[in-house]
Amino acid sequence: MSEIKRITTPLTDAIVEGLHAGDSVLITGVIYTGRDLAHARLIEALDRGETLPADLRGQIIYYVGPAPAKPGYAIGPAGPTTSYRMDAYTPRLLDYGLKGMIGKGNRTPEVIESMKKNKAVYFAAIGGAAAVIAKCIKKADMVAYEDLGPEALQRLEVVDMPATVVNDCHGNDLYVEGMARYARTAAHVCSCPTRPVSAGYHLSPRQGDGCR
Amino acid sequence: MRELSVQEITEAVSKMCISANCQASEDLVRATEQTNADEQSPAAKDALLTIRENQRVAAAEQIAMCQDTGLAVIFLEIGQEVHLTGGDLEEAIHAGVRKGYADGYLRKSVVADPLRRKNTGDNTPAIIHTRMVPGDKVVITVAPKGGGSENMSTVKMFPPSAGREGIIRFVVDWVKQAGANPCPPTVVGVGIGGTFEKVAYLAKRALLRPIGQPHTDAYYAEMEQEILAKINALGIGAQGFGGTITSFAVHIEVHPCHIASLPLAVNLNCHVSRHETVRI
Image 1 (cartoon, rainbow over the protein chains, first blue to last red):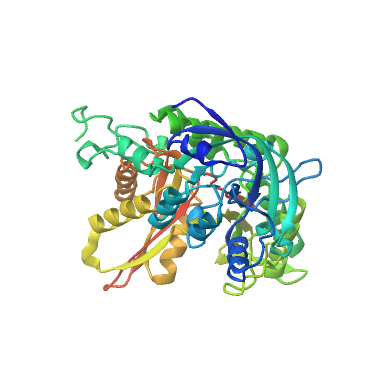
Image 2: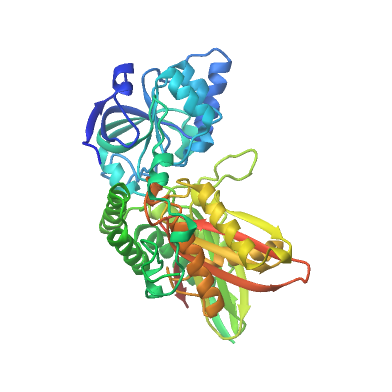
């Protein structure tokens, strides 16, 4: 693992260019929430030539629909949602000036191309780790689309929010590289029950270790 | 005939909606720790450490492990000797979901209409599967199901000629294609047989089994292990960062089927695999 990089929003070309797939980062500053329906509305607003409810140029959108906050909490559990659902809208937002996205899961080739063209970056946060991620969010303010409930557009203040660079602006992809590094060929796969089944899985680390 | 008030069912459902979302089950904790011990990729190991820490924080503070607290999927087994009193059973379940999701600060993730998409605001209606069984008990299982992994699920109507190998190839390819999307390490629920609608139900039910508990039929237990080994050889790893363990377990459920058919369903569950059962 590479050293952890600290970055502060808004993002500049220089910050984005310095990030590479696989980098662990800690993000501090303002980021914005937005998922399915908020994206649809943002694009409608751009289509109508309207000013967006927040100036997203240079900013990061976090694909998240937080759970309600318990009393005394700044926000409820707030982990990433799956990003591909935003792919249809993303190139348009990147052309407009959005610089970063935090989510989880694969992006389309169109989004990856647009990230290269616009010098933008895609981070993954740990999906399902919503309770611990919420600890990095110090403040949450409603910006727009409150009627969408968990899908509303909010402004978050985050301190040292951990994320991993999946797609950098140089065309690298952690998902592709990580998988290639650990993929085993069929010949290396063993299904013989030499481990207790309760372990839930079984892999033969190498060929010729007694498994066929 | 034993009488049981549906209010008891409301209470039980409400409590289980909260506990299932906040408290990782023992089998899940064990699977997470074992996976972390066995994983060879540092990036995946890091992710698993965070996932385990998240389970601790959620349990200690009684907050949800994942912001997607799911659509409430409820399995009911009603003993035929039970007489339910005090109101409409399904409404009693919805009331339990409504209360649990409000009291537990759980996210309301249901839209009233699939195309017009207005949030119902209380996470109802639940999805309810009811079965009549012998006896005088009611068994209720609450299985909150997140959208991310549910979206990475499928049904495929194979011809019988596809056979065991065709099924294995399809499931492994399907998990490969899902990649990082369903929040690996996943539990892979596989339904085989029945009809078009039955097979999806089988795959869902397969997710309720304690993680890694093998099928009682050795033929399918072995097939579960073979599929799992092939999935874990894909290299996807926790969160798709690359690694040696992509799924905690594969669970197969089967049912007799038509001479012309070989239905298959794959229902993926994320690493926040949630289900809780009570017998009243």
